[in-house]
Image (cartoon, rainbow, N blue to C red; front, side, top):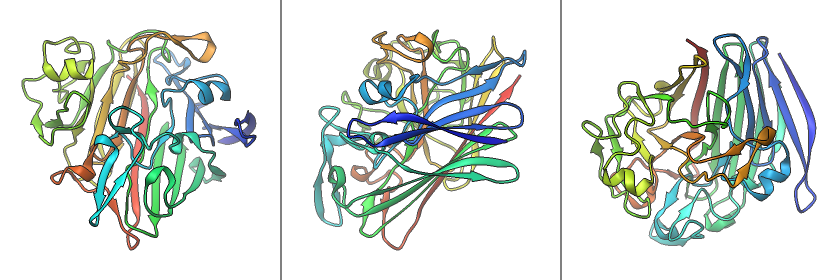
Amino acid sequence: MKIERHSFGKTEDGMAVDLYTLTNDHEVSVQITNYGGIVTLILVPDKNENLGDVVLGFDNLEGYLQNNPYFGCIIGRYGNRLARGKFKLNGKNYSLATNNEPNHLHGGIKGFDKVVWSAKEIKNKDTIGLELTYLSADGEEGYPGNLSIMVIYALTNDNMLRIDYEANTDQPTIVNLTNHSYFNLKDAGATSILDHELTLDADYFTPVDKTLIPTGELRPVAGTPFDFRKPIKVGDWIGADDEQIKIGRGYDHNFALNGKAGELRLIGKLRESTTGRVMEIWTTEPGIQLYSGNFLDGSITGKNGTVYYYRHGLCLETQHYPDSPNQANFPSTILNPTEKYKTTTVYKFLVE
């Protein structure tokens, strides 16, 4: 197993950025840049033992600086949406940027996806990894408290990419971290993901209003286009005459995962039949956002000159629920100084 580091360029304000390549004993590799903690490449075998990339992204830093719809990055301080950019904590009202009118999205104008993280290489007997750290100052993007964050990406010889998130704060705040990789197990975004077969262990999802904010309801998936409890193709119901599908322009919804939050458990599986590639999703989180690439429109040219058209990638973002600080019945995203934020997500790559 090995780690290689190369220069990836500089940010607009002159900060040096590196690209790290983690490669295991089976030649499976993951590339990560310390700009935004972005996963730029995941190279895994197909059923014929041919290695292929399975995530969307750019060949160079410039693409991520100029035209990135959150490809592969760490999302924070709060992943997903907060209604009208507002929340109340311990009786005090906070106002954040409404960068996804009329709501706050993915940490604001300069979230964790747009900062340069400190990086440290990790080498153990059975894993190699990258430890990324960042201090989000009190008041950054309107959030209270100095938040110290550590994210560890680790690649194993079992072809697992494990992501561990940790954070602590000196004031009460809210935290909801995730990774925003766009997956396409067939060809890294050259064609549609509608034939990908998805399974999610979720009996309920959280319907949304017209601005994609949860209504507060936990709605059973049974009898709806959101029932992925048995494997179905993503495209089977994505065009259904269903109000939630129409609002999301497809899938852009949070699923309430079964099992005990806080325990690492298998909650989903993505399969692409022509390549035989399979990705298992394991997480300690209570929710996952399925986003079917509804806003990809052919305006972005990514790696190797690939044009990313409508629904050529999908996201499976493990998370706490969107807008939780404003929803009393949702799992809490409050972090206090006496507590440690700690979550884990694993993407395991297999061949069938």
